Length: 483
Ligand code: ADP
Image (cartoon, rainbow, N blue to C red; front, side, top):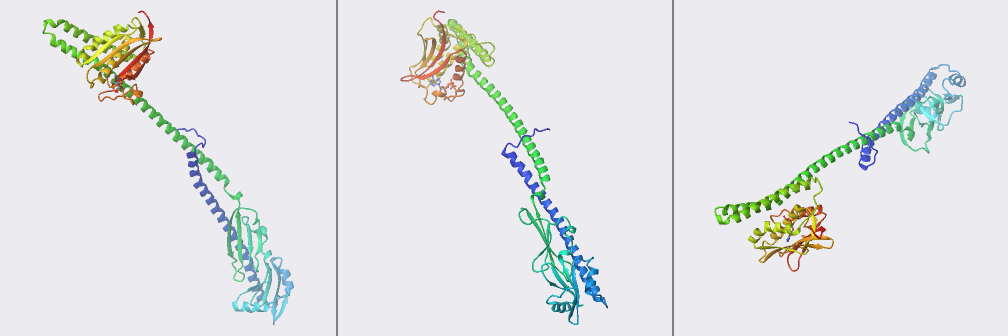
C-alpha cells in the first residue's frame, strides 16, 4: 500500500516524530561520545607510554655511567649523549663529596644522593616546572628538561591538551585546543609515567565541541523518523477515512430502514381506518341479509364498504406517489360540497354510534379550492378521526364541525371539535413525525397531512378554541368562484 506523505501538521504527528527521534538521537549521540572517549583513552595511553619509554631511558643511562671505571669528562659525555637525548641539559657526579659536572650542582644534591641510596634507586630533584635532576645512588646525576622529551608533533593527533607535573606547577606539553572560549563537553584522564624513579602525573583533556557532534547521523535519522511519523499519520488518516465511510454506509442503511419503517407505519395507520369500516359494514350487511325488508340497508352498507375499499386503494397509490413522485400531483378545482358529502356518508354512521355529531357548513357556496381530491379526502378524514379520538372521554354533547370558505385569495377547510383542546406544550410539536400524546397513537397522522398539504401548495395550522376545543385549518389556493 502506498501512503501519501503528509506534512507534520498536527500535534499527534509531531509528538510521534519526537518520540521516534529523541531516544534514537540520544543513542546515536551516546555511541559517538563512547567512540570518541575510546579514541581519546587510546591516544592518552599512547602518549603516556611514549613519555614513559623516554624517562626509563634515563635510568638506563645512569646505570651505564655508574658502570664506567674511567669515565670521560662530563662535558664530553654531554656532547656525545645530547644528539640522541635532546632533553639532557647537563650531567655530573660527586667524588669524595666534591661535585664534578658540566653545570653547577643545585642545592640539596648531597641530601638527594643520600635519599637515593636509602631507597636503592634514582630520585628526582625539581629545579622549576620543566627541569629536574635525576640523582642516582651511584653518585651520577642527569639534568633533564621535560619540555624536550617528545616533540609536540609526535603526539597522537586526537589529543587536545597534555600536561606533566614535574615541579610545583603543571608543564604544558601539548595545547592543540584552547581551553577557554569554546563551549562543549570535556573528557579528561590522568595517568602516571611508568618509571619508578620519575612517576610524574600526566593529565590529558579533550573538549568535544559542536563540530564533533554526529550531525550527519542525526539529520539522516531526523529525516527517516519524519518519513515514518508522516507515513503512520497518513495510514491512520486513511484508516479513519475508511471507518468514517463504513459508518456513513451503516447510517445510510439505517436511514433507509427507518424510512421503510416510517412508511410501513404510515400505511398501516392510514389503512386501519377504512379497513375497520369495511369490516363493520360487511358484518352489518351479513346480519341484515336474511331480512327481505332490510335490502336497502344491505345495499347501503355494501356501497359504503366499496367506498372505503376505494379509499384504501387510493391511499396506497398516493403513498407510492409520495415516496416516488412520478408526475406532479393532479391539481384540480375540487367541489367542497361533494367532498364533504362523501366524508359525511362514510363517517356519519360510525360517529353517531359513538355519540358524536358531524356537521358541514359551506360559508362560500360556489368557491372551490385548488387541490388533489384524494389527498384532500385523506387530510379531512385524518382531522375528523383525530377530533373523534379527542372526544372519546368528553361528556355529551360531542360535536365535530367541518366548514369551508374563502379566505382572501385562498380557500380554507376547518375541522373543529368541542374536546379538551391541545395541551400548550404539544402545540409547537404537533406536526413532528411520531409526536403523540395518545397511548395507542403513532404520531404520523398530522405529519402526513402536513406533507400532503405542502404538496398542494397548502398548509395546515392548529389552534385551541375558546372556551373549549381544538380547530385545525387547511389553507389552500383558490380555484375560482364557479366550478
Ligand atoms: P396520533 O393521532 O397517532 O397521536 P397525530 O399526528 O394524528 O398522531 O396527532 C398528534 C397529536 O396531536 C395527538 O397525539 C394529540 O395529542 C394531538 N391532537 C391531534 N388532534 C387533536 C384534537 N382534535 N384535539 C386535541 N389534540 C389533538
